[in-house]
Amino acid sequence: MFCVECGKDETIFQNGVCLSCYLKNMQFSKGPTIMDIKFCPRCSSYKHKNTWVQEDFDDILRQHIKDAFSISPELKNVAIQTQCKEQDRILRCMVSITGSLEGQLITEQHPLTVRIKRSTCDVCSREAGGYYEAIIQIRAEKRTFPKDELTILRSTVESMINQLQKSGKRGLFITDFDENRQGLDFFLSEKTTAFSIAKKIQEQFGGEFKQSAATAGMKDSKQLYRMTYLVRIPAYRQGDFFSYDKSFFLIVSLHENKVRAIELSTWIEKVIDGKDIQPSKIYGGKELIREMIVVSRSKKDIQLMNPKTYSTIEIRKPTMELINTPMVNTVKLDGYLFLVPG
Ligand SMILES: [Zn+2]
Ligand SMILES: [Zn+2]
Image (tube, rainbow, N blue to C red; front, side, top):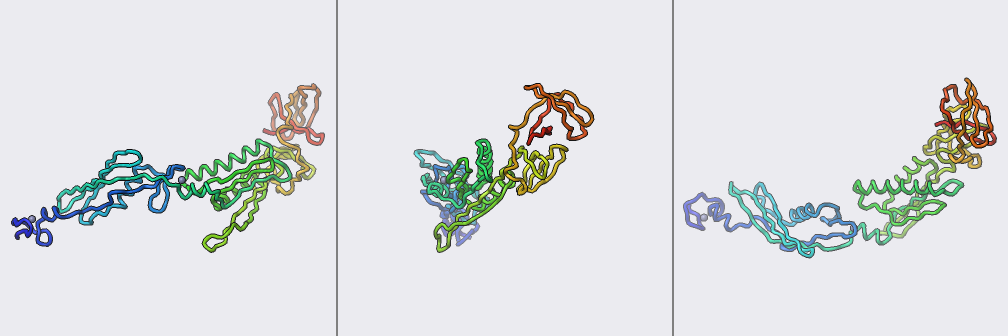
């Protein structure tokens, strides 16, 4: 057959023309000459389709080009390569699209100008606008917080938020924060996350959990609510001494409303309901511990000497186990002296 275009006696590929004439007149790829990519300078994220993502610019550019260029399905084994030169936030690029058709390698080149447009992303504009969905309030039962306890609580919440942000929760941020001796307030952008953080704080530090909702205007004809998640940390802390049921205890650990404690005259562990610990029966923590010198020991008793006053006292050993250190920790509660384990 003769090609209607070149007149040569060739195999006809399509519409009466040979393959080389077909390729000469065909454009297999098409794309824009100018492309804008939005960049948020506050959090270094790029907009791709309708979402903001924190990815390498090269990956973002590749995705934008893939989306913007249309390539004929006739072309097989397509590869896209881009070479760019940057100048004042403008990239002058050459996009090469390569593929094959009937064993023929085809390359098409498209000059492309990419403009990086600065724009504040959804999350950053919310943050700048003071947006929040929930408040985590941390308070203490019938007491104010000492500084060290506030520091621990604060860094616990902050490291939980940091980890969640690192694991990809882009919309999560602290809008506002307040700290005083009464407690801590975290204003957070996401209420479901705020809920789970508050629950974890309760799990770790014990106490009560309460939630309440307040109306916060309307959005898309729907009522908006702001949540408050209150964690009330108990009056007692790990390491505190307290009396209960005519016995004296040391708190070993807390779990929600339960307290694991050691009875000081026997060193036997017991789990006590936190509600049963009266704030007025809490003596304090490790500041009450005094070191004493072991003078002698028998099977049941131990004789101790105060290293400052040299006065001696003999008390019952809490267990039959050997106490073979030269010094021991003791605590005096309501006039009774106890050995402190650990
Ligand atoms: Zn031809
Ligand atoms: Zn941003």
